[in-house]
Amino acid sequence: MISMIGLIGGLALLIILTMRGMNLLIVAPLSAMFVAVLNGLPLFPQLAAEGEANFLTNYMEGFSGFIASWYLMFLIGAIFGKLMEDSGSADSVSKWITGKIGIKNAALAIVIACAVLTYGGVSLFVVAFSVYPMAISLFKEANLPRRFIPAALGFGSTTFTMTSAGSPEIQNWIPIQYLGTSPYAAWEVSILVAVFMMVFGYWWLKRMIMKAVNKGEHFIARENDPENNRKELPNPFLSLVPLLVVLVLSFIFHDSLAQSALIIALLGGVISTYVLNRKYFINFWDAVSAGTIGALIAIANTAAVVGFGGVAKATPAFSDTVNLVTSIPGSPLIGGAIAVCVIAGLTGSASGGQSIALPLLAPHYLDMGVNPDALHRVVSISSGGLDSLPHGGYVVTTIRAIAGETHKDAYPAFGALTVVVPILGVIVAIILFSLGL
Image 1 (cartoon, rainbow, N blue to C red):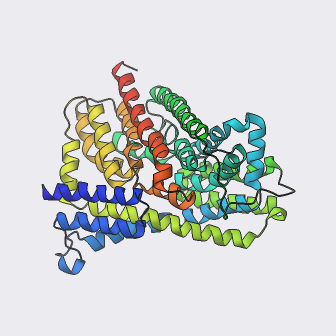
Image 2: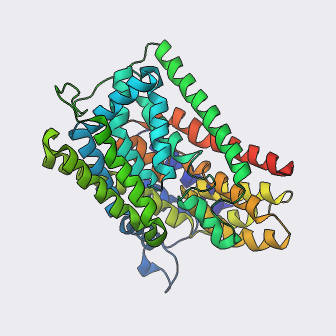
Image 3: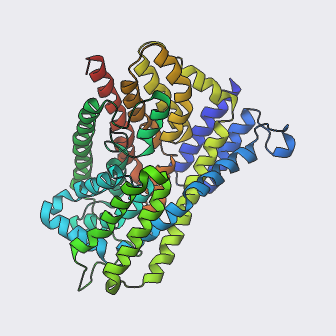
């Protein structure tokens, strides 16, 4: 009982302190230490038996492991976003889009841009870095409250694209190795669920924005916002080329290099931005420096939360939770959805929820004769629900490090679109499968 109180209490502490705007580099290890103490984990490796889990080792392995895997992607992605901003490319594209679809549809333009890049294989974190400068320009032009930018970025990246059939994101690929399926598993149901999430989610986003506008909210500029008073901007079609370069290169090299393809893709984006728009830069090297600092802040905040997950996974309470949610009676699809969703919430990671639950779920459910394609799709969609609780790595990076917002202002809309909408999508998927689709 004490160990479970430690796990739930530590997670609650992390969420509450994060929502209050406290520094994640402090609150994440403190919350992890709370979990460790109440679960009886030694604090230091010197106090643990050989090979035994302990707070310091598990936290730092999670922290450093994330940085080792993602540092270059964060760095180049942040630099790419800053170069798009400094060259005026983001402004150019935003003005062209608003001219075509209307300034009232600024939020829709952001959602579409994120969706295209995500479905093209670009990492969610990188998509946020890349599209944010354009989002600032669009929201400023439309005079919309900037606190909704993270919600638009998250909705376009982590809902109807990330977990849909055919998506190259890892959340759609992890089930393949356990279920023997393909990336296009249950594509018919996937399309229907994706359309539902896209239509309902955008309606909800637009409704929240309009409600805020009617109450008098508007765009508030900041000192560090990109200047929008240039006399000359790059050609909008040439400004789109770097984004297309990232999309095409990530698609070409995805199968052979997996996530490392993003390094090549983003480098291609950086080089093409410079070559095509070099005469428009205000200060190229200042933009590179700003991108570097932004990347360090973003990856450190995210790694701090991943470290918490590393400690949580080593506790007896976590093992008990996994055993409980993976043995839920009733429909295997419901049990699988709940198991993956809960574990993703505890670890703050959609891929983490799948990687922990599927080795346990897959053999058991396949022996029961469950349709592997249906299980693949349900597990994939459900992993994108509770992974977006306030402490999630992507959540913290997008709201805090990239958009510079507070959880208090930005998370209500962000959580509505990235937690509630995917959960509703899972329910729709299970209903459709139960009807024989």
